[in-house]
Image (cartoon, rainbow, N blue to C red; front, top):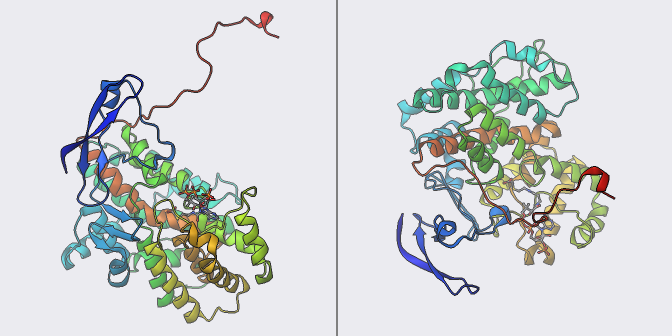
Length: 433
Ligand code: CMC
């Protein structure tokens, strides 16, 4: 990172000029360093939604939204999705390099040593209503981990940080599957460490004591790909939430619970569930054009869920892989007869040719296809966003660790443009109208 050039800011009201250093990352747009701007000029920058603001330096993930590029530690997401697996991507995100054979075997072993949850956590679940949304349950249970694992709460101890990170990655599938089992009144299924991360999750979801679940390799591979494709996505809303929560020194379990809360929203991770709900609402292919007219109507707030992205103004590179996986899964499972899935495919075809979406550079995002795959795999709609959270936990925790180790790290504290009343005299109650 070099900062040998400056941008000049001229304040037309006072005639003063300020020299702002220009920073260069390893690649990507240059950044104007405004850290000293307030001290020197008394002005803040204004950027709601942080559309032009870099909040940190990071070596983990690079996105070029114009070109549709996503790299983890320099590796293209398409190569990772084709040639790697979720545990390897998790290692890469957390440690910075791809593992060799021995490193991978050790990592998988270390993670699987933590897949079980404290037995008392199962009683904790019983405090939730059965009809609670599993995201509500996961948010609560992950936050509660800090009440169970006191030996990994010291964020200044690298060993404790690593143990907490492994615990979170290992326990998320267990916690998620338990939320599902609780909602349908079935007994919890314990993890099995001889299975892959994806297969273990599927088994904990679908196995019952009376009948073992047979793992379909197509399902296992699709699930593993979905996990890889959702593993990290630089400074999105939930990751920024994790970093912001962590910037105050909060423990990792609390920070990841905050990330889960942020992910839940329909503009972010909640979109995969919203896609399915939207398809149910449309109901039939014959209603697509009416629905799309609502989407295009400025006075109607309907959006085509699963389309558009804050950063990608070209095809979402994750969606490319997901689309292929989606078609593979549907073909392998012969589920062409599901009217909702047929509707989704028709919708995709129409929207991709529609001038409104083309002109606004709105392409299907990863969530358009993941929802469809999840449905084909038999995963209930309410669990879709939970699966996103399972996958993203490794990204969140890698970003959290990077933040803790960053010497530039400060407590996150944005400022504001105040638009309320200025100082006025207090009126006692008897003088108010
Ligand atoms: N359907 C219809 N119009 C849309 C859509 C959509 N899905 N997305 C954006 N637009 C229009 C929007 O109305 C606006 O039009 P105009 O310029 O005429 O006012 C223009 O495109 C730009 O939209 P924006 O809201 O300013 O863009 P943004 O970058 O703030 O929003 C987004 C990004 C993802 C929130 C938005 O595209 C959206 O709501 N998509 C649907 C929800 C969704 O699928 N979210 C998942 C994102 S991918 C998973 C993840 O990483 O979390």
